[in-house]
Image (tube, rainbow, N blue to C red; front, top):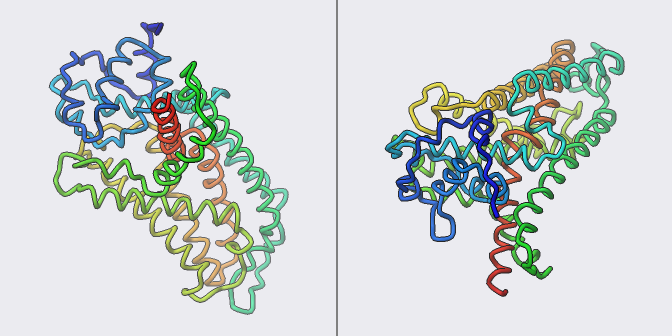
Length: 381
């Protein structure tokens, strides 16, 4: 039997929710939602669960992850209960629920923890460079470029990359495992054959690579020019660029951080251009949208939304500057900017990937995958 928590509403407001108690259950939000169907009636159901304080039912639901926040439900809500923002707040809340360390909750609900953690991680990088950096030589390579790997040998930086990747993997995978327990294992008595985890796995790959769920939205925003095609392209471009950047930094640093100056048609340069263009385009797009506040999905920004955009923007800009200074033979600007670049990049990855905005990139396809496994098991029961 579900247990109601009368304090849940106040708790959820810490994650950005508004007064969803204004909802009188008219069902308009579900009627206008392009993603709502017979199996997934939302956001109405999630609003009711939140009003009643049914924490366990919310924790076991994938429905907050099915929403891409087009804002149509809030636009048409006669009571201005802002169901779209509630769904966004529930995703933040669920991120904290999956996280046993408690860090996710603190980072979402406390500005002190959010900015304190970023500052601490940046300080760690600065201290490491102060004591461990190599010679700051002004001697250039034969091609006229800066010897960055003399100052920051890529093999040493790679060790830090792998330590970081290990920590990210621990937090992210443990959180996903907790998601699995809440979504799949809560179905007591339901036998799930092992083969279903294999046969349904393509849903995970498909939704991660394509953001396919977004394609079901008829319109995104109240203004016609914010069409599905433009928004999806920007969203996918940003996502894929981030993935390319992450893979190059963590797995191919020796190839990416080189003192060689390749021709612009070299794969290393092309991948760098792609990642840079996607990150910069996406960040500017969402910055402009949040400043203008013309669409429902851009009107309300949690502090972590801005933090994510600022960190990503600074990471991109400092990365661009490092390459400009390095290629044009400017040693000291290259060294100092490289340190600043890592001081921004490291906190962004450590905080945003497992606990904040970018964690949705993993949680959403996994939630859909787990739900598909459960639904498939119920059909053969």
